[in-house]
Length: 191
Image 1 (spheres, rainbow, N blue to C red):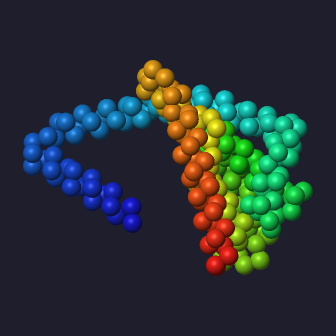
Image 2: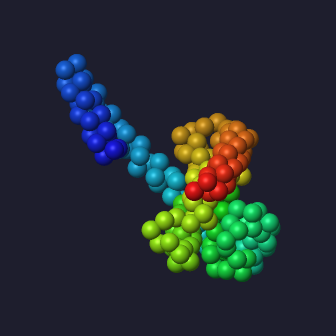
Image 3: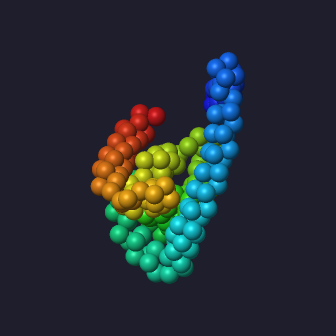
């Protein structure tokens, strides 16, 4: 659907700019926005490399085991189908930890690995298991203690207080995660 809507919006914008005589403004905004996009990517690169490196180091130490132990009671409730010592359990825990730390880019490959492992255990290959659905919901509405990407974006755009939004982020992500998990649990019983 979006592959239809975006070209339509772009074409309408160009037609409107042409009819109103604003082609120079459109041209300038195209070049300015591409310049800003490249600058933003470069400024975020350092932050992402740092946190991805920290997650790689953490995965090779006992820190992950300790954090996994802390998450065990929650994981049992959220993923009752997955056994505690299973490889999938550790992959899910690593993904949840990365999301909590605000490391969406580090969480993505971990989440893909966990989904592949869960699919191998899934008895119905053409349908999501309840654990897979819960994992997707948890990833989409993840709790973030340190929203590193948002802080990095605010810093790159010259914010005077990059961390001012942390408490609202906590409230929003906790509410979103609770609502998502609650809805998923109710719907998993019906379907």
